[in-house]
Amino acid sequence: MCVRRPTWARWAPIFSLWLTGLVAVAAAPVDADLSCPPLNLAVSPSEPTPSSHARGLLWRITRGTAVPSYLFGTIHLGDPALVRIPEPVADALDRSRRFVMEAKLDVEEMANWSRSMLNTDADALRSELGSPLFGRAMALLPRYGIPDAIGAMLKPWALYLTLSTPPATGGLPLDLVLATRAESQGKTVEGLETVAEQADVIAGLPREEQVALVRDAVCYYETLQADIEQTKQLYLNRDLGALAAMATRYGLSESARYRHLLQQLLWDRNARMVDRMEPFLSGGGAFIAIGALHLPGPKGLLGRLEALGYRVTPVY
Image 1 (cartoon, rainbow, N blue to C red):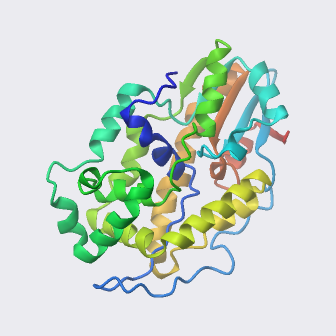
Image 2: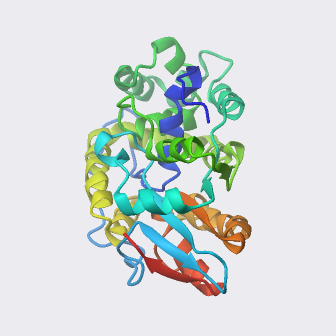
């Protein structure tokens, strides 16, 4: 896997973060002059905190006589505290025969994805957002190192993804750190999904919904950034139950839209990923790294694997 920093690399952490499901979505109404009302947060999660699989990031997956495989919940950030590979995780990876991630971020696919983020009409974004929202959004982009000329050409979904992440620290996200380690050991690196499949989840939303998400990201920017910091600590604590609760405390004023988006981001993709990881699990010796929020709950990967007859055992 190429670890140099081509042009598309600025977008890779942005692209991968929302795929964890840890990116907050706040859907509260915003009036025409962008006077944002207070954000109502759920006191308790709208989905119950899972009673099983609530703690732990690394799980041993076994069935029959196949060599054990491992499922590891990642967080797609390059924060130095997050990319240090714990010893049990490193040991499981080093003993595995192949490495499987959500999507292998090869240069050509990422370059195509980067191009798809941009409008050809430099005035399209301002027209779609309206001047007040456009101005507020553009004022936030310098902290991401995105020039005004590029920012003004972003499609609404791409602007939302950008503002829903913390400014990059410059380091590779944990997924790519793991992939680089695997490749250095001569392991095969595979992906469960394509970059296009993942991007289509949000790029395919109706434009009015994309604009609504941008409004939320702008109106509640500081709150969402603070929540990302809290998410980092919950991840370091290996608290899957609390991470699941964090993901369900937004969007109460537009609950139908939020539930639909969560269904697309997590549960539908979980079903697809379980189908595609089965050949790797049947062959044994696989190390599979997927965003941590995909793991817990009745519709999570661990529960789905148990329903298929696999034994899932926490390791770390």
